[in-house]
Length: 598
Image 1 (cartoon, rainbow, N blue to C red):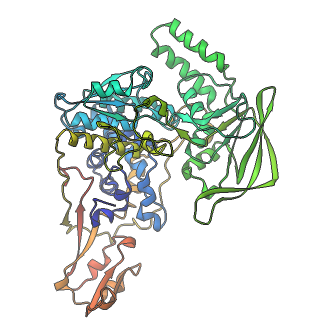
Image 2 (image 1 turned 45 degrees about the vertical axis):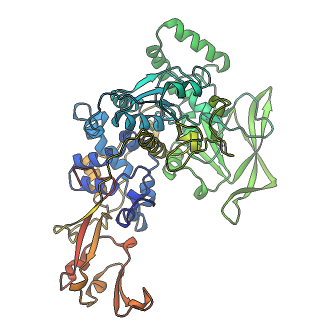
Image 3 (image 1 turned 180 degrees about the horizontal axis):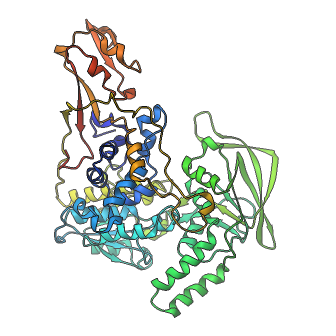
């Protein structure tokens, strides 16, 4: 990965994280009982650490080297464990402000941020920390973007989101609510008003499916279905729901359909608190009910059809497993042929068999068997086939747009084709993971700060510090299995309570102890090595070998000692066995470690 040294890339979880959180360091701190250090390390590069502890897609876990042995470390759940102790949800015990750093009075430079989702909030956080005036322009009455409009409440408690956002606003960020770009304010006006503008619009428009019956009543785009439900609008979905799609949004739509009645009651109470008068609430409810009659109850039968086989689905595996536990049915390798319409409303879906989804080069190119068709009965059909950004809001003089319908940017800085205008998140890349949006916001903030002539504190160079105490000969870290993250029993998942409830302290310690500590590196003192080969003999995975040096570099002579770092479990048996003490263990303090820790 550009900009990272070998030892950073040799920590796979750190290298995979878009904001370079040193997950290995905070997991090891939890194993050692130092939860405060763990929180500081997790929070340092991420202003939305508590939210990420619940819903991050966890690319760090995908990269975790422990996964090559059995299962990866449950890094996201361990982050939640420490944020519950010291994050915004911890009340007086919160360390959030300490990690946000001192914020000076707003300077003369001002930045307008369009969109209050994760990219916009991350940009606002960093820009305020750097001393600039920041105003967020939000089309709605609440901040959070797709964190509250797209992620269901059973996955992410709205009180937690509110606390995380409130902490950022408390840094001195101004917000103009009910201000929609292209309607209430134009991009040209924002450029005149501010020294720089960040475009962090969300992908709130659902994509259509060009098949017969797609315009019938009872056919919803998934993102619009989720928006309506999360905003408290009443959606009549009936008892049988079919969801078309194989991604995370499809899983969210399917699982939300089961909880439609709970959303109705919760949102009615919430709306009564949020709107200023009973008349205003009544007018909103009446307007919504014209289009959506009151929901009868949650769907009794939800079916997801996907082009892909189970192992090919883009949805996270745990999302699929949770959906199955809740009784959602899956039909794999089926595609939509037409929506059956009776009396102007959807009554079913005709599906067609899928022969293959990808071509020989791995590109999406589905092929179908037109002779293999079947019909599913349905009161509602939800299309979860993609999202797009409202580009018309940018106006005629907006920035250059890419062929795929996103704002064209410099990938290193986030700068658009317009002077003084940056873009990130969904607006620049289309829908993707929350942690990627946070990284985009931070990238935009850093680039804007540099454009103002500001300088960023240099990242501390990593160092190798010899760890004379390191030994794991008595540990059972290499034998323990992954500790399942506790969740509500399937028969109790009828409301909006979070399904995942998090680790207890004992469970967190057990899971954290499985970490291989990839930040620890075996060092060789060449002058002391006698090439006896005892280290190779004792290695339990045969990772150390002695080979002729000529095999490494032509013209070399002698013998070379090789270590396969990608499979090393840091057991330190080689260090213990070395008769000349030529081998030692050192800890790498690199990207993602707080200054006071490094």
